[in-house]
Image 1 (cartoon, rainbow, N blue to C red):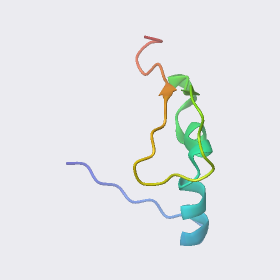
Image 2 (cartoon, rainbow, N blue to C red; image 1 turned 90 degrees about the vertical axis):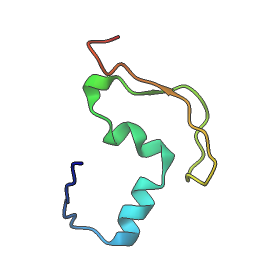
Image 3 (cartoon, one colour; image 1 turned 180 degrees about the horizontal axis):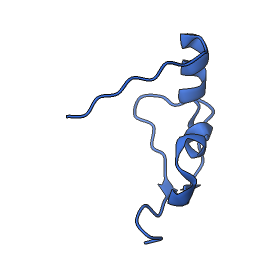
Image 4 (tube, rainbow, N blue to C red; image 1 turned 135 degrees about the vertical axis):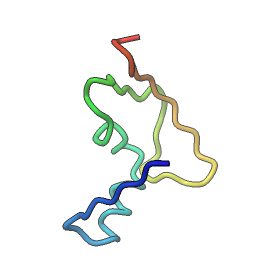
Length: 61
């Protein structure tokens, strides 16, 4: 099992606001993975939410 910690210079509330916004998924996905949302994303994630997207994690496959 791998575990890592990262310190952010923002409040927990600001971090939660960013990470709970489904529209930010592309911001935290490496550009080389070609992340593309293929369906509607609500402003905030919620339990049971489905997000559809496409990515190419291995040599464009």
